[in-house]
Image (cartoon, rainbow, N blue to C red; front, top):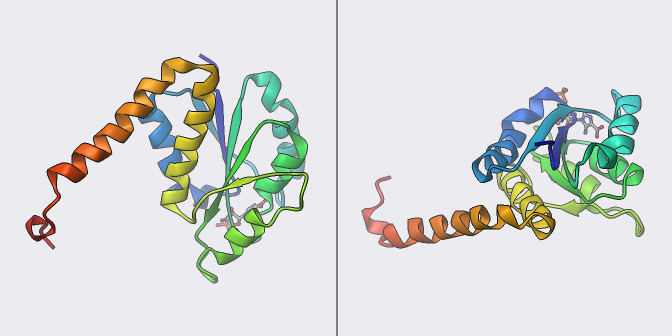
Length: 165
Ligand SMILES: Nc1c(C(=O)O)ncn1[C@@H]1O[C@H](COP(=O)(O)O)[C@@H](O)[C@H]1O
């Protein structure tokens, strides 16, 4: 099946973070693709990616970037499908630069902004899965099972004194 969710990132160095989005979608068995695209370094590729995303069948784009993270916003400017932004933790400013440059979009071009780093990547995948499940309810049981698994894990380890440090 064609990818429903596109994961893009500004650099291969973002993969350490963004792999968690891909792993989560793999776990949910939702078709997705992964590509390095940069608003700064490959602007023409970004425009082409965003302009053709919908006709390729993508329904949500997850865009991760660090530092001056213009990728999610520029992607959102060129497509009407939902864009979820993941701020990658930068070395110099710890990801605050990434977060602020993704979240603070001007009114009219929204980017759904997640948390900095791994948690944001995982949650972007779960949010994208929830969005595509509206149209493709066959993915809903996997999402429900994911949540149930978390509940079971907490219930199975609810005495913190038993946890080895
Ligand atoms: N923020 C952007 C964009 C963009 O927004 O278009 N393109 C690359 N980058 C970011 O630059 C950081 C450093 O990249 P390198 O590790 O390749 O030097 C990465 O976190 C990437 O997302």
